[in-house]
Length: 168
Length: 168
DNA sequence: CGGCAATTCTTGAAGTCTAAATAAAACAGG
DNA sequence: CCTGTTTTATTTAGACTTCAAGAATTGCCG
Image (cartoon, rainbow over all chains, first blue to last red; front, side, top):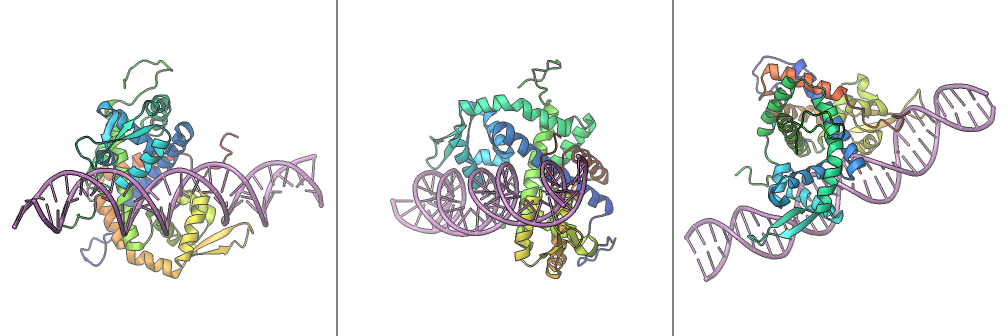
């Protein structure tokens, strides 16, 4: 389709050739990488990448525990998705739920010792995979620029699970 | 965890602080953007982003048709995933399958007129969403660099659905 | 206080994806 | 040819995600 300098509001501003190329490269990179890491972790840790990210997040939290809502926000997923995920991880014995002392509605997700152990054993392989896919292939300047770009993009997007009241 | 300059093969090379920050920014950006575009397209076009990408790919192909395997490769998904997707898109009347004349095993995915029409009507909104999330927020230099980085990453990863014979 | 609204989290159903198994046709050699 | 392998595509079952709905609790405010 076309790309015109015009300002006709009826005519959408299509992507330039360079923008298209970048967008396509982005789609390919993210699709392939997500797929790659999902396989790597499914094979080595028995869970998809996002579940692994939940364990990591918990492992870095004080007392290895976090409120459900905050955990969901940190990892950028909906509370619903988190509920299902934690249910599964709980079956594996890698996570546990406790009632929140200060808010009777709340739950606290806790990383179990077994969960931490899984992390300890599989973290090296995972870092290696991430490194091989990204950091071993970019210059330090590119890493910095890449981080800045991703931050910019992320900062412009609504948090996941931002329930209805976005039009208030 | 630590980061040591040592070359002990037993001690994994953890990510530096800057690498961690970049990796986290990447995860946030991709998670949020994928989610955002999925919602945008589900709302405006009635399908997830990857399905939309299939229609786009077909629309740009000669005679708006493509062999299943090639379509899967172009969009970086497995043949299995494509089979499911096309089955669904066929129900919507947006795609159609034809037998391949030259290879009796093969199938050709064809974009229907209805499918093209959906694309025509929803493309402007989708470009706008992509533009708002990415291109309106980056400088031209960043766009170029971003494209180069994504290309590098993508080029280092195996194609999806690369069946077993990878250890041949 | 009393009640309505918002928050927190879970659930169930429908849609999608993965992994492994299957079927069918093409190919490659002996 | 005829057989074993590869390629192409689909199918099944199970896992995961989304969306809408629901239950319990808290917070606001007149």
